[in-house]
Amino acid sequence: MKKFDLVIFDLDGTLTDSREGITRSISHALSEMGLKAPPLQELEHFIGPPLMDSFMDYYKFSKSDSEKAVKLFRERYSEKGLYENVPFHNINTLLSALKNAGIRLAVATSKPQHFSENILDHFLLSQYFDEIIGSSLDNSFSHKNQIITETLKRFSEIPKEKIVMVGDRKFDIDGARENGISSIGVKYGFADPGEIDTASPDFQADNVEDLFKILL
Picture 1 (tube, rainbow, N blue to C red):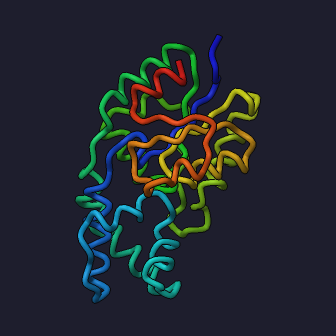
Picture 2 (cartoon, rainbow, N blue to C red):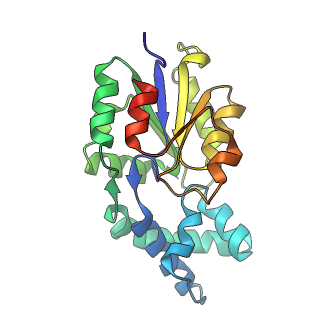
């Protein structure tokens, strides 16, 4: 018997390793804003939460300056950063196996809908998903708990106890808990040290192979 009837995946840090494209685009935005950008590795905390929030949290930008920084980020990201990206090893095989097992699949990400669809199309991953739900460009729909809520509405026929969220940041785990579904915290993504342990997901996966064991 299937453990879950619906598996919801985060995108960045869960399905694809997007660190190069995102951090280079963040660096570009900071430079254009007149700031000296730190080494790219120090910008990985931007991966996951809404960009508006991160610019305000980490650089104390005003709302208007954050909006400008996000615009600068998107200018580079839409041209180059989108494809400075690669699926994690064996993700394609995992998604295929889940689909073949009759498990429905969705993506719930704080990345804008348009970018998310383009990435999944580019890497031939869209074929596995029943729904792809991303954020809005105007930041009115961007927080992970909102996005998970919307995802669940589209699968209202599936009992919550048969649904699991898979993600690499505390926002994924917290969003799943707030929506009353199970969670899997993956440790191969972009979480800060100890972040997944502190978030207390129902399951933890050190690699994609662990996801096979948990989900199949």
